[in-house]
Length: 101
Image 1: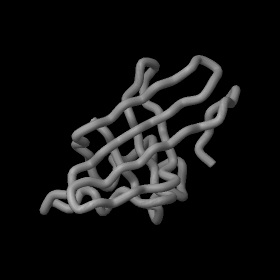
Image 2: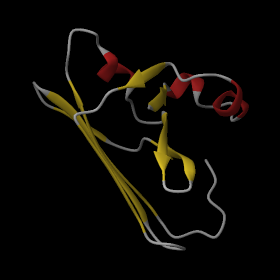
Image 3: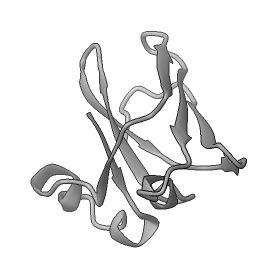
């Protein structure tokens, strides 16, 4: 289950731990690749459907994605919208302590 917070609700870090996201996403494609102590890359494609879940995916928002070591949080940097899907790719630089900025 992938939780998504809009940018307006992603400014208070405690919300990520105590509340559900603004919506739950059901992407057609989601891939997380990670190098230990290295780069993490998230690729996600959300269908454009009448339920309008794709509208919650906006730059500045946060995604909570399950991974091999528990939940990981990714800030949405850039999105691409077509007639059928919304795509995003997030690449984080290697860091010793992963934090949401």
